[in-house]
Image 1 (cartoon, rainbow, N blue to C red):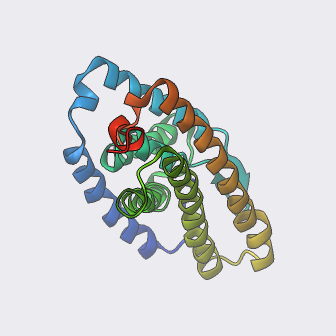
Image 2 (image 1 turned 90 degrees about the vertical axis):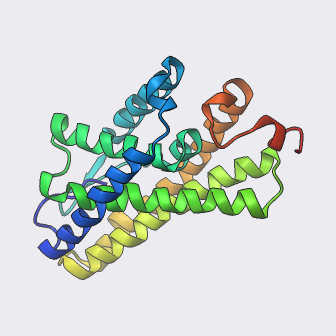
Length: 221
């Protein structure tokens, strides 16, 4: 999500900036070098960056000056892993801020913390939970992507709803009607779309999913 300047107290923005900066730098350090050194891997990263940039530009503006858009976090984590996902998603936020003026420099850390770090943490947790606690078969992988996508959006939705209720004078009913409910429905739609996309990857480009292994999910090993 893209949050304008002046919407939340300065100390909240400062805390999120303090959180976002070191985590993004650490993610850059932890990113697998093969995503930047190989031609095919570089093409994959570039494709994800372009797709996410286009997806985020389809945002809907709502009062009080916020912008809502799809997240695409769960699918990105499934494709490149959590650390590389943080780098790509954060780069998209910076790119859209510089080129399209989406958000504000002062709230960049808040936007990255709530719309990148939080959902990536949820996505990675869901992946690990399903990987170690559920059978490693293709239908479970599909369910993991859909369920994880839903929880990513709902997690961001819950945090931002609480922030709106605590630190803005926007009427609670309109927060629920114009923001909370819309994001919840968007989460369901994104979960379905992501499941369709990942099924196509498994059929035709399984090497684009670093979290998917033929021997584990198809051969049962």
